[in-house]
Amino acid sequence: MPTSAPSRNRFERRRAETRRALVRAARQILAETGDASASIQAIAERADVGFGSFYNHFASKTELFDAAVMDALEELGQTFDEHLRGIDDPAELVAAGFRLSARLADSQPELMQVLRHRGFGHIHSPSGLAPRAVRDLEVGIASGRFTIADPTVALTALGGSLLALVELRFARPELDGDEAASNLAEMLLRMLGVSSEDAHDVARRPLPDLDGTPSART
Amino acid sequence: MPTSAPSRNRFERRRAETRRALVRAARQILAETGDASASIQAIAERADVGFGSFYNHFASKTELFDAAVMDALEELGQTFDEHLRGIDDPAELVAAGFRLSARLADSQPELMQVLRHRGFGHIHSPSGLAPRAVRDLEVGIASGRFTIADPTVALTALGGSLLALVELRFARPELDGDEAASNLAEMLLRMLGVSSEDAHDVARRPLPDLDGTPSART
Image 1 (cartoon, rainbow over the protein chains, first blue to last red):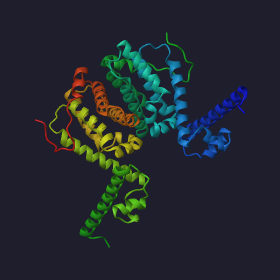
Image 2: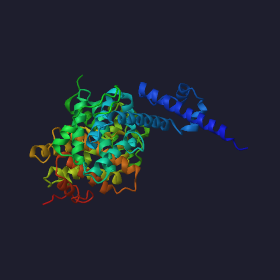
Image 3: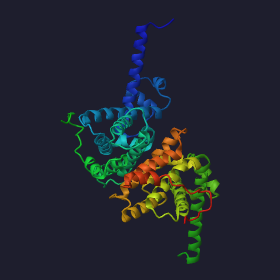
Image 4: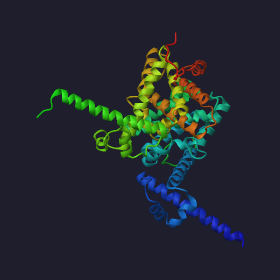
């Protein structure tokens, strides 16, 4: 007998809630310990769902943790968007996104630890920070601010440089992270076709405080 | 009783041979399967050394495989040096090194698979490809060919972009790898301060055939 529409909706809703609870539990575990070795049993308990539900949603723990990282990056992308609203120059948007992402090594070290190990798969992700970078790159190409042929190739350089910078920061904690991020952002802007003087300036503009209230610059 | 000089030398020599045999065995395993899950027992047997010797040289299997990757990268660095001898322009050296490294995704896929997972730790390595890139960057800075402040930051961008490109190639095998590597090398040369026209040209110069006999260009 076919399920009636209302109960199917209820089923779908409950299913989505279970998935969200699992992703939320995995994100909590990552944020607290960065330790993806927690057992599925422990994750299910934390999510307050049955152990058996896990495999209705994820084929493996790796798949869940990848989903958790994607979820965190998507949320970050939205936060960046809110705080960078009002900036029109795609060069400043790209540089600010890069520098704010590099700061996560301080503010969200556990997430960044996970990205050290699994980050490459996220560089060309359809959600999170990647599509926002591509959006800014495409705006800059259309306006002539960037003189590059292929946003995908540029994204490769941006994402790879970001992950390598995160690695450098973990390897050399004495490094001034903000300074290194600005230097790298400046070089990457030159790569995109921005003049040296302009790149130097744009890569050092004040950054929004992500903990504060988002406010459009006027 | 102190060991006499000759027998100490013999001991040291034998010790170095055992280490080399273990590294060689690990490199063979990586080259054949890219599988770092082989047991220490299996590696020791392959190296034809006693199981107990392993821990005289390496604290863990991870340490051995890292040594194996470093060994492979150092050998590659020497090969690149031999084949690029005769090129004076540091921009061409950096671009050629980048493009030849990207080709390893085809010629040494198992090594590159390992680098996907553990490559970040090698970007700022004191041996292998990293110090050679720094050497070329420093020559270019000294001659004014590159207008960058800090070779370490530039190395971060080069290494991160290279690993991200390798990842992109594994994710999208239909991509023209040589073309993508040239595009990325062109962008990275611009980043280093090379003019757009020049970067376009230099990133597309013919590459040496690494399988052939190294010959200095005249």
